[in-house]
Image (tube, rainbow, N blue to C red; front, side):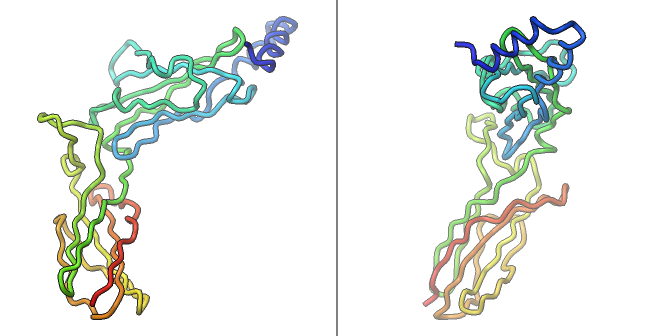
Length: 230
């Protein structure tokens, strides 16, 4: 059944002059169409046009690689009511340049297409923090760091590593809960770290982050992992 709001909009069009139709069309146009990328999971987001609430509209999504003349339909997002569309599988090459675009339709009206700026996953994706595992070995800690998993596959069919695409520096911090003191314990490219010189009978937490020197960007910090030193 057609939403009442859309039906009302159709009646308005029939009663309006031609000069009044164009503003209604413009107000349907999706706003702020953009990619949001995290760990190469590339999601197209947009906002509803100003004339209709989002639940009274349907949306159509297309994409293409830079240099291509033809737009491709994203079948899973063709006629969607959502305000996002997962284009990860259509934008798997991190070094390529892509575009997405969105059109709104309701009650026989449709908007113009709204296109994203040029999108390059390698340049724009944001990194999650590394996964941290700690093991106490006597009075020291062994810290294992694992970068986020990517949707990209290597030639053997396994998920590619973030280190395939970036030079990553890992930073590990210890927090002495008794003294409420934080200290940088390691900075480097190794994923296995030994932390020694800890105070006996103290509680420590470990957090880590990844740093991209090329972009001068860092990830958020990982969740704290805590242990008691005997």
